[in-house]
Length: 269
Image 1 (cartoon, one colour):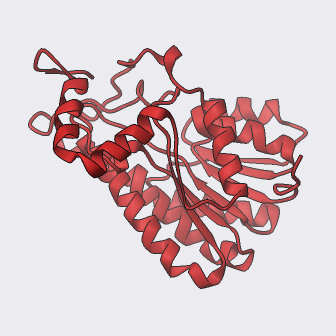
Image 2: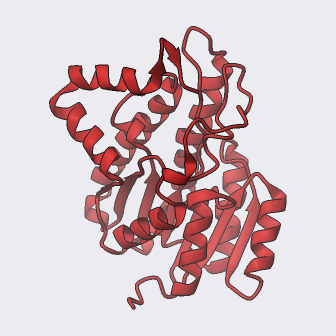
């Protein structure tokens, strides 16, 4: 087994559930020192108890708030001496047509998905540069292909992808790797907590979660890609197919996407 992560400090936002939690569960046995933040104090407490004998640092924080991000990053550097790898994983989705959605939906989604990544990256940048480390953004296929009823989510992920690409170019001569990961549909809590038209959690998933890629499998792919210092990672056959189709057959993909997300003219939420 590779010792790539041995004594590496990995900061992960949104570590209380889904892909974030799966990353923590797999990185600690690889010898990493892990710091994570999330809004749910109870879930973080349970995580800390589960790994009470491991180098795990947990902070309650909302990444949409700059001062919370500052607390997370500064406490991580104080605890472990620096940051080698930052994984911007915290995210939220939405389910509403533009004509129905309150503007608060778009503000919340952008604040968490884009500005949260911006804040944490800016705050940890000098440490990552000094260690010639890695910055990761957990994006989405929705960052390559706009999805109906998820327009704010797509906008935030397009913004994340473009910003990370620009940052990668800025840091080329610093030997810092910048990577964005686009999972396809993955089993997680993101659809249950997706915002409805009133900016409140919808509380259910429209997908058959059992048929989706597990968070654990997704985490394994991400960890391998970090070790290989990849530029991008697109997961699942359907995800790769969507990116390919949208690039070469955009008009056809418009129709296929519309058909997938609407049933009898009604948006699947």
